[in-house]
Length: 219
Image (cartoon, rainbow, N blue to C red; front, top):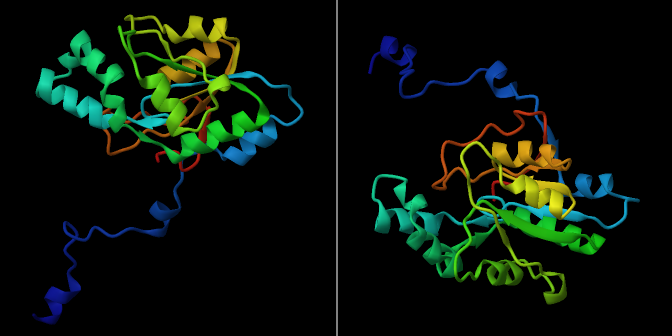
């Protein structure tokens, strides 16, 4: 190889990066579990809410299986109650608890807060989601509330009435609707990062509403 070839980098293969690109950070309001805990110091026990999918559970295995079985190459399986019966009744056994969820739930249990899981999944005849969450996150039986399944309706965030009914003060979720819904319900919405290797895409823009975003919460 001659000297001229060595002096001409292959920018397609090795694009490189400059210091301006390295140092560029989006103006996101990052918070840690400890900082959230500190912000709640001196406040009485309260009701807090959690979304489930991609917030506390990495549930993509079940959704991937459902798509393969009920509607390969399309999202029509999400409109199939047979899928939801499987997901809510069996396949959450394969969902992986997120460590960030463990840390948040543990912190709120220590505070004595009431924890509610509010999901846009539809209600099914049978469900093991409540049991899975209790076991995965070591929630005492007397502190475990049954999962609230609200379903979905176009143009309406059905989580909002549930948040209002339970008087939720803090709500954690990975989607834009979780944050806007929390605010509509008068709650503090805190964003949890959606895992980038899951089936739920595209990834939302964390911090797009100026909300707090939990650090390292993609796992």
